[in-house]
Length: 590
Image 1 (tube, rainbow, N blue to C red):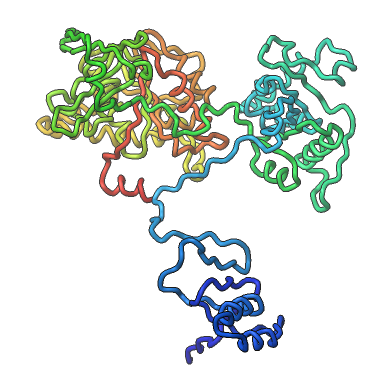
Image 2 (image 1 turned 180 degrees about the vertical axis):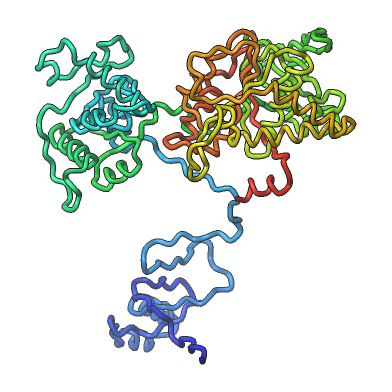
């Protein structure tokens, strides 16, 4: 089969108005287009003039009457750059020197609609129309809109009624919202419902607005083709009707449904996500638990510095009391480090007390040295050393570890738990639990007892136990088998479904994959702690499998932000993967 011939002419010819204007001697006239013929007499007369005036006149006439094709100039003038207009819209130039990013991060979007931002500037109160999913997501959302009013369409109440049956979290929330609405409506006249019910009636002083119900049929023209019987379209019709009735007031639809918000914006209606449950708008601002000291820290804070040593649990620890301008930015139990480039020794410490501009800093124990190994495990980087100091501290009751895959969260937690259960006898046993949310399709019901049903979900702990058992090379095969049986007897695997009402005393509780927990579930788990119990929350907020949870609204993000600065809790964000070079590279490029 012969190859096709290359075209001798360009596929698309630009119109005369789309070509760049002539800007110098490096431009050549292009043959005139048939669609827009230019008069030739003016060009002929221009040539007949004297040479001193003919050249500029000819160039000017050629630039106006005929399109030109620009030839690449040897040195373009920066003062007057020549830019060709694209025939089909604006084209953004691509910089060749900018490399393709390895990690893609979502662009930061405005949480509020333009209508809402405009109302904020003018100081006017808004009218929020709530979708059903907002109420089922957060039963207290009615009281989260401050001085603004809330409007509930009749279709929202219908959908609440359809979802109130069952034992799921959504059904419980729907029933709670129904009870709240009943308490708000009770004891009011019909006129009061028409004029709005004060949301502060039940004691919520922050809610200064009013609650309105749809008490009559509100008809609005929606585009043809949208099914009128669908609940989402009926709510959109209510929003459009309210906009026409209450001109000059900001009417905003609030919905957790992305497609609902897209349809609203396509129809020209302001719509927002419900973001009052977000702990942080940007997860880059999440507390990391670590701060680097400035290079001149000791010069500015070394004056009147005190130092002493304290021996506790058989270990001698050095403390420093420093005063200076950097201290107020620190938090209790936050890790600080200073790694000079001039060859001096690095400093790793933990803030233990704060009093104004004075801080007490504790020098950390070096768990990267083999003599301080924890169940045969040593820290491989700075963040792991910080984490082991928290995990082995009996005064720290609540520890959260964040980090990508392969940073050693589970291994460090399990090693420190075994050391404190079997060696120091600080805790009775290790309790492990996690959310049973599958990554792909669910494989159905699992046979056996509670622990046997949880077995497939605990593969990560089995892998880490295998690594910890192999660390003892002198024990032999029989010794390792006996150690494994002993370890198994001290580790209990529990399901989250049966946690309510329990109290754990002297337990080492590990909550794995905590990023899939909601803030309410996290509160249920953390409040199970009895005397002498230590709770660990491990997770990676970039791997959320639960629907309707985001990095900003995850229960793990919630407890990290709420517990920071408490004297009996600590947090570390592990930065470097130590699983293998393949896993480390895959987490970066995939």
